Image 1: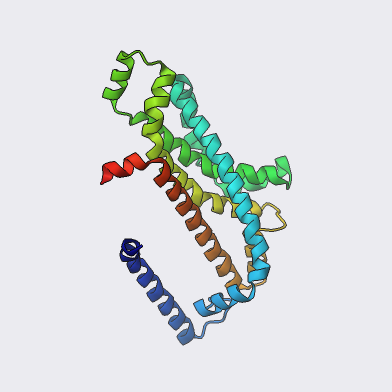
Image 2: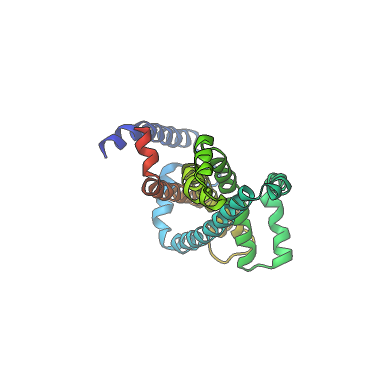
Length: 253
């Protein structure tokens, strides 16, 4: 705990300084709340409207969690298939790169036209956001397996499946968790974007209603909530990494 505090006090100090400058600048310039609220006004709105905001946050958490699990599962399956089937990788990999060049904001209205306002288009949006980092990270981990270890296992008579399960999969875990961390933060953003497709609850809905009524302090509350949720998701994946990749941390020491 002490070491964490020693490492973390500098960004906390910078954050406090930025908030102080922000508060002072708003007060001195006498800016209206609808243009730029002061941090104190945002905090006041967060405390006062917490009960109203809580159902929206819970809805986004559920949506982001389910979408994250589905997206990462799809990404991992795709990575394993592309790794074990080189011919398929040569045909599909360029299409994966192209899929990330389609703006989600542009794709979202099309998904509503094709699949309606239900849960499916929302899951598609989050899956598209989450699967790519996992796929790329896992593929990189599989490819970075030491070649001498591969030769040793092949000389010992290991099959392709044994080579994958006993060597390539464990070796790819650190890289895989790096991809999961990225997807964890993206999942909250993807959930908020998907809620713009016509959800009844969620941080995206709360943000849209607040911006349309010029309640800028509520927009900032929603933004801060998204940042906090993304950080929490990241920390959970980091905690899981410490449990499953203990050997990697020992080597670092």
